[in-house]
Length: 110
Length: 111
Image (cartoon, rainbow over all chains, first blue to last red; front, side):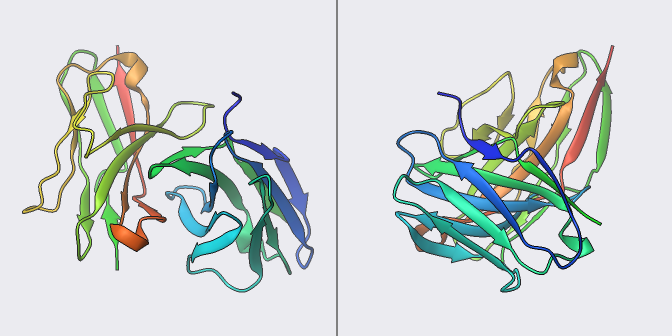
């Protein structure tokens, strides 16, 4: 098993644009969480989805949205990008309250 | 509100010396505590969790509810222990979906 996979690896966008980040969980994991990690900080919780339902949401604006598909993969969408959205976006799939992280997508907003 | 504090941003020790990475938390309930580690150019990975009470790579951590601490310890540090370490907390029951992380401690073990 390759573990949690994320795409793309790196992304450069301009302010005001929209971005979609993708995540594939470990086989058998039905829960996916998204985190934002700004340089010098620990990861900050954005969303968790379980069985295609939103189970929790962190303190992020409505520009951030996500969804989970029947195969348990997930997308994170961010609209109207701001410079402050530049960060590493981590996806984690979980089983029995243990979260397994992907390599992340590095988003740079210019 | 749940909060995790790691007071040391950087920690440098010599090989063979004991190491302790500090973690304090704030949570009104029974939390579950974790230590995650990120080696250079690798993904974030779980090192240990308090409910397992296990030792991984020689590291141990004990949950002290009185002091609300979950310090990570190793008696003899190795160069390969050099990495970024994050303490994290999740709530109990219906709120256990979310991990709250500290800002991390960068451990450097010198030869």
